[in-house]
Amino acid sequence: MNTELLSTSLASTAPSKKPFEGLLVVAMEQALAAPLATCRLAEMGARVIKIERPEGDFARGYDRAANGEASYFVWTNRGKESVALDFKQPHDRAVLDALLAKADVFVQNLAPGALARAGLDSDALRVRHPRLITCDISGYGAEGPASTLKAYDLLVQCESGLAGITGSPEACGRIGVSICDIGAGLNATIGILSALASRARTGKGCGISVSLFDGAADWMTVPYVHAIYGAGAPTRQGLQHPSIAPYGAYATRDGGSVVISIQNEREWRNFCESFLGQGALAQDERFSSNYLRVQNRLELNALIAQRFAELDLAQALQQLQVANTAYGQVRSVADMARHPALRTWPMAVGDKELDLVAPPVRAPWDSGRFTAAPGLDQHGAAVRAEFLAA
Image (cartoon, rainbow, N blue to C red):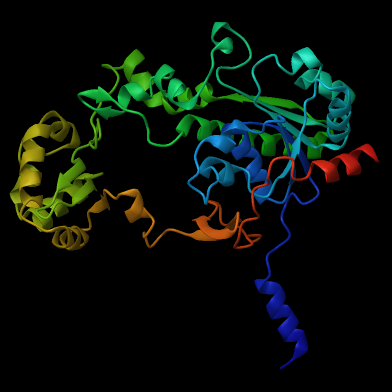
């Protein structure tokens, strides 16, 4: 075989160089929001040095689901280096100062004011290091009466009104993942990428900040507009949509549960004719527009539920496909783990290799496997030697 063609073929299948190789990120982080942001940067090739308290990030102790380690920790800290520091101690402060002098990005989600008291706040750092990008992550921002509130995910779900529109008509509900933390982490990543682009043009760093509450409030824009300027915020609907019908869950004869979504009148006509077998229903004065279907939701749901109750899950899914109706099965987490769309990458956790959910962004530089999350202070000696000697 032509060796030139072979080398070209191999190069085309090898992972591309990651976009942030050579970028140094220093993170004084804990729990979920900040670690998720810096994990995304690590996936893009950045070197992330995680500064932990001597007792470690408390997220290490959340659970033992990942071969004895915490699921939260292995998810958001893969590919990082860990250094345990107490920056109130002179020797450890010298290590931190040396790291920040070389850093491109500094991320922190300590309590508001904790770093300012030590002269490590965003503005003070950039006086010493003008190219440094700083990212502060908080619960409610750094100013105002809410800034001193402790901000854990469920608390912010409640304070932002998110829990108030989530759940069944009988009770509020928590979104089943730490959505406010996750949103803050992703917003921080967006902000850091924007700041890096700005520095590439201007040569100067800048400070950005995000809060869990700001992210949740942004997602609440539609309910907010309805509450302040419309007829009132949407009520809790369980697995129903507050302003579109039919858009909700229906039970099949064998105990399955399927959510269907009708988005326009063409889909509604097809659904009536093909799935319900009642073509005239599309023109029924109770159901001839989405507005009327929402107003007559109870009658509409009764008709649709009756048809689903006549079918097994497999039959219902087949007929929904024929009707070209959008649907989603209400799956358990175990069902999701067998979903044909799920992508996983292997990752070493302790003495085992676990298949974890692959990154949501597919990119040319994907390696197909995760680098392990670090042990507490695993890289402490090497980092101290490298940066104090510089």
